[in-house]
Image (cartoon, rainbow, N blue to C red):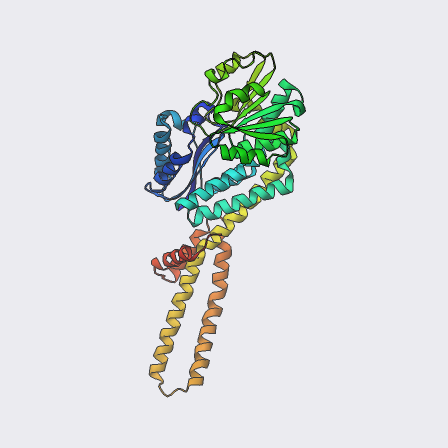
Length: 439
């Protein structure tokens, strides 16, 4: 079984295609289960954000795993497979681990170093755990990835190199509106991205923040959490809030437009400058309607692509430091995984040795029935010590050798040399997985 990544992101696909492939809610759960239930797939986790859709899987057949996952992505998105395949990337085994760790550190994000991806990875991981599609392998990979991401941010300050999408978008807004201290902002949505927008606007000193959301209670909670003057409005009052706002940030999980031409009609008659920031996928705001508003400007995900280049120019040292961290963590993780893979074989060898010792001691008892109990204990102890000493060096050495690339060959050699039952290591592995606990 090996780790496989199949996906597409802002680096490989246009936003319009990402919009079509992006999944959430019940559709995400359905795709997760269909992937997990596919032939040759043992585990599955799906990360679906505004910048990427990636399937992390554990497979026993590379080509068949890639084919089936690609087919499922095409089926759920409605994008013909031949069109989708041109934008898909595939990472396998060691390269897959490196990719997941890099994603967690923000190296693969549209804005290098943004910390939001850690929460998104954690959310995808928890969903897979709740739905029963993640096993020991992906559990270990994602737990380690989350730790690597935290380490990268703590040790390098890469989160200061690249701001979040919200921060970058608000920088663009400043260029159009000027300082945000006198701005009345409207945030449409109450999810994690909206929460980040409210917090960032509060730090920027926005005069007032209005939160509108389909579920009014969530809007109220978000407004109450703001460290700034803020209030919540019900969604049917959105047109009124639009006329009040100078800055409109929309980031909902809707499948269609939220701010349509009808809703935006008449906005701008007061002659004020306005800025619309659309951070949703699919897009929330009708760009054609915004173009009809006097003094209005719009920035969406496509307009923020240059933030990646800017981050690379600002912080090459921090980015290189994170890459070194990722390389070290990947090497350590893979070495530990290879060493652990030989453990069932070592346990099976020691179990066989114990069985041989027990059988020989039983035969000795039959041949020497008059042997006193103390002598029996001394003989048993001596025989077991001899066996342990003989096995110690080779079993320790094989675990050391197994941590290097190609180390699985040593486990196979051990099995052949000692004529171990091929099913014995598998039984040990199954028992380990069954008895393991989730943190």
